[in-house]
Image (cartoon, rainbow, N blue to C red; front, side):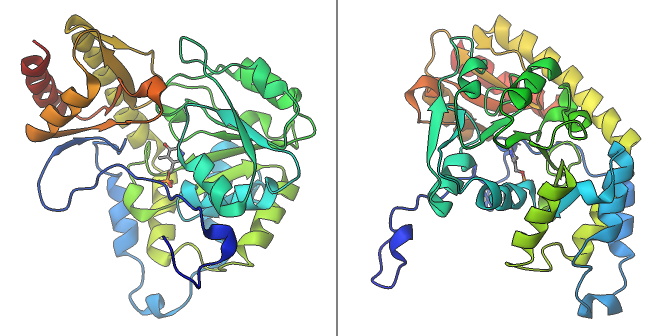
Length: 354
Ligand SMILES: *Cc1c(COP(=O)(O)O)cnc(C)c1O
């Protein structure tokens, strides 16, 4: 972008590139890690029950009822909970609030590609630590002097996760900087660090309702941490927009947090489908990284990943291909869909790689 009125500090801004969201053609959509199952029935009921007349009123700027519900769900206090308009917004607030210090922050070289974008937006310096050969995170690098540490657990797009004792080591080894654990996919088999937030004042754990709770469409995410961290986030949020979460999203999110049984069942199904998919892909000559997420990261021994991506797209199946960085440009990230969707995917894939 270029315009003579553009602020000087934004001249080199590169925005995040989201996965394709085609609006014209119907695909088997395995490219943006959405949940293949619908939200809990109670969610739509709650949204429908929002009073029509109340829509003329601003929503609760403190999101009191939603924060109470989240705090009960995780056994923390409402003062330990910050909510935002999708976890992307929560992450954005966190970068702005905590990472504009003098020292560079650190994150893995292969990770959620929104992190370097926030650094560009807020003029935050960063260094990256290379993943190990097996695509796991190099813990020792995260203990070097830094202005903050952020990792997704499980990592995206690899799907690999760190056990809780290693997360604890990262938090303990960084007493002077804030560690953010982005747990967007934690409910598909990982170990959450929320339980550590009452032990460490330098830990912030961020969740989203977009994946496990099938609600990417209503944009709600939250952070859990020490109450002073939450107060800082609130102050920045209230200096930007007091009413980030609308009434419909608030109602839907509260119902979703209360529907744990429904969502645990969906997640169990996804895990089962994931494991079956891994077996089938290995039989087709794919190498599949171990995943505790609702997606898998794969490479084929003979057929080029970009070719597979393009041919699948032609055949009506969307998966995610990253042309950069070079380290992952022969990999595909495949979201786990329903069994039916995965069968269609598998049949198309078979003809492509055989
Ligand atoms: C999907 C995702 C998010 C963003 O979730 P929203 O709440 O939809 O903004 C954050 N972090 C990671 C690692 C993700 O994959």
